[in-house]
Length: 390
Ligand code: SF4
Ligand code: SF4
Image (cartoon, rainbow, N blue to C red; front, side):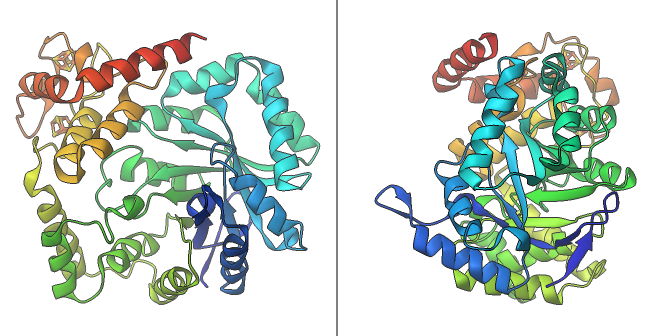
């Protein structure tokens, strides 16, 4: 296994991390025996970074049962505060205490504020006193490193990153999302700040692996290798990436991914290889609706529309199906303190003056609103507003 060091703390972390959220289920519950086989095999392969969360049903408890069998010291344990459920300061202790109990431990190595979506979501936690709470937990040794996971636009990510003395962050990043969410700009800024960057969704939950469009799979096959191999290689080669989480649920998958991590040299991608990714992306995007590159020159919108994210989600819907696109749209533009969906556009046209692609942004946003903000979206938005209010 290859290891990378968290530049800020000196921690030695395996380049391939175990995302525990995809353990095999049996009769609706986690198959503990199989989960423990997977965790033991991951350790045997040198994987030391295990990631779980309060949110994943039964997951922390399954990891905790394994750790209690003498493995606690072998693992860099990461879990997450369900910050969206925190309503008052005392809730921080409530959720954290529950997590320690589930995980059968008295400290968390890498602790994250789960799913921040914009600066306002972080500001809300600060207003509830999260900074003092973190400092107290760190001083007591109950939290060793503090970070956050993020789903939202690049601007929000950069503001959160600059606003606190983080030890690490976790972002969705892969060759398709290079310009979406925190994106390559977020990755590079975090690396410049000297903190570890943990990558989630390296293969978009399988949609860049076994569920990839056939035309793109063909591009990779012709170049030699599987889509999963190419997807992981793209990340392992980047020196700014510290850990790549993969939701592995079988011994075979661990072996395959560990071998890819082992053989990928940092910075090893040649011009020819990069051209293969471009061809695959073109194949994936052949059905896209808006030719937006995600450059962000049109931002900020004075009315709060996250233009690149609106287009990214709309394109995702066209290339990967309505559920994936709508989920991304909802999480990144709506499930936040200050929504940034296409419907907030007032048609002032300011953004269009800055778009190097000369896209008719207003016309495209109307299209996004029409196709992304249908009845299912509106029902979910009503629920989200209630959650945000209470
Ligand atoms: S046209 Fe719409 S998206 Fe563009 S700046 Fe104006 S309000 Fe924002
Ligand atoms: S400036 Fe144009 S291409 Fe760049 S993100 Fe905005 S809409 Fe997309």
